[in-house]
Length: 345
Image (tube, rainbow, N blue to C red):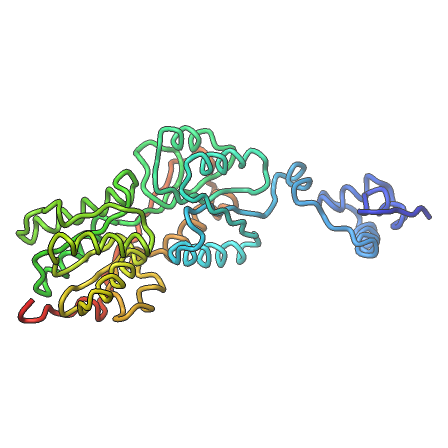
């Protein structure tokens, strides 16, 4: 009997099993063979330590049983929650999940979209914070199914799961108004991002609903990190103290709270603080942070289900079928950081 070195091949498996190379190929690719042949091949493959190559199998059979999730920041608790939800759905369906952090770099996101043509995964869940013309073109021509977690312009032929950031921001501002606040500052992310635009729209709409005048001196645009939140709060306090700070995510809110504590200001008696996302960070701060739950877990779950429905549909769904879009409703979670204003505030 022949011997082999290195990675076992179908030739060495055929020699060990005493069957033809064609029989080994049929068994390994699940095409079909006699039961005794299947048993011989499986036994020989196990004895030789044969491990199927996922890429090679995908080229022959069209599937890798792998999905990719590309997100802006793998360290952000929002995306951690999405990963957990996506992986739960993927594992239950027999898929592995590959993770990629794009740092919100457009070229990186476009490269991930193009990589579907390499067939290293069967489908992609993409979470961009900007949608450019290049994104739209890449989505239209993607080599495999894609689901976007985020808002898309009308007519883009991919499934999507959205958060209603406009309504969510309005919930937070109205809540702050209801607790007696009238100088409600806003620390937002970059204005050229989808979440930045939507949260600004919700903030302005809620101010108008509450009879408050929009004051540009109470608005700071920055990035979405904790340090940026602290710096933004320092800028606001240098211009005159607001009685509330609404932040576009929990990381900004924790940074703002840190700056307020450093100045000896009490939360919520002197300044109330509210965030968005209701991430694990919201309960980790002191006092615990009021935050708008934008359904991170739910969005991840729905995105995974939409993608798997394209790949393994319970009912016939073609890749050219009408794109499906769903929205996770926001929910305000009230905690101690937005108690009522002190009488002398």
